[in-house]
Length: 394
Image (cartoon, rainbow, N blue to C red):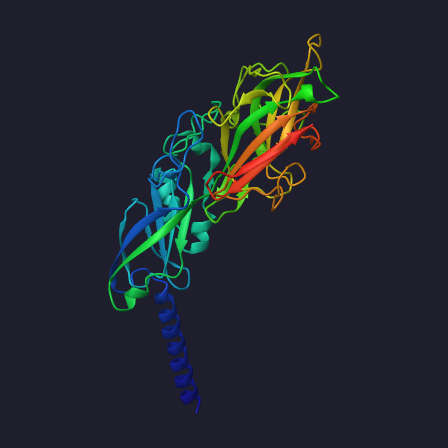
C-alpha cells in the first residue's frame, strides 16, 4: 500500500513539473515560429523646422517630426518580451508569439542606452525607461553637452513614444505582418509668441516702462518615462529667490558660470521694445516672427510650470528701476482671458501658445504669483498645432 502511494505521489510531481515547464515556455522568446514584422512609423501632428520663427505645419518628417534612432519592443499576450530591437530597424525578425509592439524614438542610442532596452523583460520594464530633457540640446538627441548653453534646445531630437497592443493577429495564418505605430512626443512646447506692454493706458503706472532682460522656465519636469510619467531631478527643485533656470543676475547681466539648466533660458536680453505704450499702440517686444519657445515634459497642477519674464521695471523716466519678474503659469484658468480646461496641467504632445500684455508691476521672486490684473494673458492649447493662450497682466 505504501508503495502505491509513493508511485502516485511521484506521478503527480512529474505532472506538476511538466505544467510549469509549459507555462514558462509561453514567455520564452525562442518558442514560436519565426516571423518578420515590417514597421511603419507615423508622427502625430508633425511640425517643420525654422531657425527664426515658430515651426510651421508640415507633413514631412522634418524638424519636430524627425525620427533618428528608435528602440522597438515586441511582447506576447502576457506582456513578456519576445524581441527587443535596438538597431532602428523597420524589418524586425521575431516569432509568432508577438502580439504587442512598443516604440521609443529619439533615444540616446549609446551602447549603454541600447543595453537598458535590451534588458527589458516586459512591457513594464520598457515603459519604465526614462528620457532626459537635457538631451533636447543636441541635434539628434544623442548628447547633453550643451545643457549649460542658453537657448540651446533643438527641434530634431524630441523624445517620442508609440504602441499598438492589438496587432499581429495575422500571425495565426502567416509569418509576416505590417504594422504602423503612431508616435507622440513626450514633450510639450511653450511658445511666447507675443509680448507687449501698455502701461500708458493704466491709471496706476501711466509713465512706467519695462526692459526685458531674460525669459526662462520655472518648475520644469526634466525626466519622463516612456510610459509618460514625468518628474524633476532633485537638483532642479526650485527654492530661494531665483529660479534654477535663471541665468542672469539681479541686474540682468549673464552669470559668470551658467548652470546645467541654462538650456531653459533665453540668456541675457536688453529688449526695450517699440511703441508708445497705449492699448492702441503697445510697446512690442516679441512677435511670432521673433518668439521664444521651450520644450518641457508634462506637469501636474501641483507647483505648476511657469514661463517667467524678467526685466527692469521703471515707474517713470526718473526712476532707477527695479528688477522684477512676471511669472506666467502655463494653462492657468484664472490668469487667462479665454476658456481653459485642465487648469495648470501640461500635457505631452501639445503646444501652449502664450500672448502677454503687461499692464502692472511684477513681483520680486519668480516663486510668487501675479494677479490676473497685472497682465493680460491669452493661452491656446492644441495637439501639436498652434495652441493659442493669451494672458493680460495689469
